[in-house]
Length: 325
Ligand code: SAM
Image 1 (cartoon, rainbow, N blue to C red):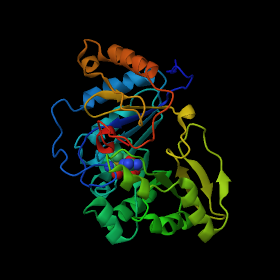
Image 2: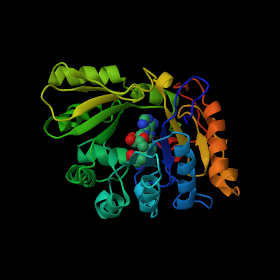
Image 3: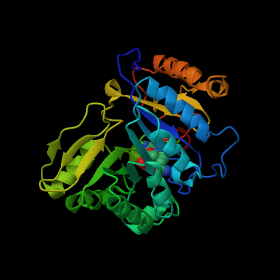
Image 4: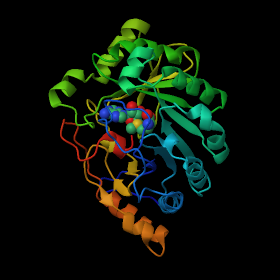
């Protein structure tokens, strides 16, 4: 069975945000003064288990836990175990800032974690601290080394490029793909943080511009084949171990191939990252047979997935931190 939306897109990929909390405070993701604890009603391990059983029965086979920062959630290993043991789920990953990966990696790998996406916007410690508002880049570099040692392939690195902030870091980040199998993905800054519109427009850097800078320094990139539903268009520097991807969500939206649905930590399905529409499905988790009810909720959500989202700067009801990237 497949979950197909009104535009013929087969929905296979789930993003589950398991907490609105984060120990970093990246300015492009959320304003300060966010939650310090998970509010009552935050998605639980058994909620995740039921949700995944329903989703997998509809053919959704890839799950990525995100947040907030998923590693600040104590129950993350149990959630990974729930995903890894759900028949039909073939891909279990996390998106993390990597800051406490060293402390938690054993329990995550034992639970069945297969892959990691690690966010890294700068190698320069000062710029890194400025963006994350307090983070230490050494912790993240250590998480990257450890992920490679653990064989959590492919190890993907996410960098949001912000003009005047970290665009000068693009060559150094690119160079990370040369000697090791690291897959660096440059993400266009989306207006999902309610930043002042003018400031956002000033700081936006297109993927084409980022690519130009890379080719200026490293020469022409070679194309690497990717699945059409992948958000990244992927290239490599000749002879390198890793790749360079561009996620051009703003300048080249890839809505027609979107295969994703998101569950927020307060139990809402968000069918499109760039559309405020959310379906509150808390009722389905409380039903006598939650798996049946969640299946129905997922089908309803698929039917409400818009053809495309809006990348125009606009005031959002929820910022990226709460949606789950
Ligand atoms: N805390 C985790 C992390 O740092 O990876 C997971 C959550 S974070 C919201 C997931 C991803 O969304 C990160 O790679 C982050 O850089 C990206 N992100 C956040 N705000 C964004 C924005 N305004 N535009 C583009 N990407 C954004």
